[in-house]
Amino acid sequence: MNFRERSALRADLAFIAHWVSPASHVLDLGCGDGVMLEYLQSDKQCIGYGIEIDDDTIPECIKRGVAVIQQDLEAGLAMFADNAFDIVVCNHVLEHIFQTENALRELKRVTQPEGIILLGIPNISNWYSRMMFLFGYMPLGLECGTESVTYGKGLGKKQAKDFIPSGHIRGFTSKALQEICEHCGLEVLNWWNQGVDLQSRLLCRYLGAGIRPK
Image (tube, rainbow, N blue to C red; front, side, top):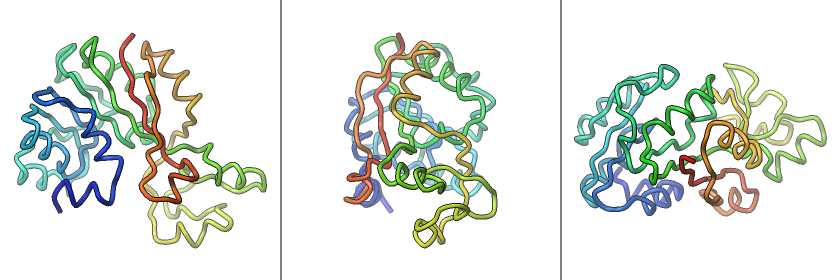
């Protein structure tokens, strides 16, 4: 599947790519199979690196000609110099990281002073989750086990039954993300609704943020 086919299913990827200027130096954290970096390199002449931990997707990155480093983000980004990148993409990665502040400070360190960090997160304060909280159920975007995502999901059990736990150990709202970014020397410039379909857009299930070092 190429980038255009993937972005038709994942509107967040198309929006992120729209932010990237031609010939930018790009770091994609959690780059998956490398499809976005492949597109940025071929269509926008960007110079890019990907960080990925999944054994299964590393060969796909290599096939696409993406420079990928297999690395756990908990270990930091010491292989990159300060101010190395114009754009750092961290799309639906932060919720998997235990040392959140350390990760944000590393993003700041490797980003140019006038560069942009593009973050994507599940929004646990989405409207559906607010109703689930009201009746004592688990919100969307949080997991309490490693074998199923359906625990405590109430009416969401049917929707979630085909998913496997993906390691969401952090939960974010827009206010929480803004405050933790400020704590780590980052400024949130703007927000967007990252919904990939009508339902998720209406519920505001996913948030995107453009962030800059202070």
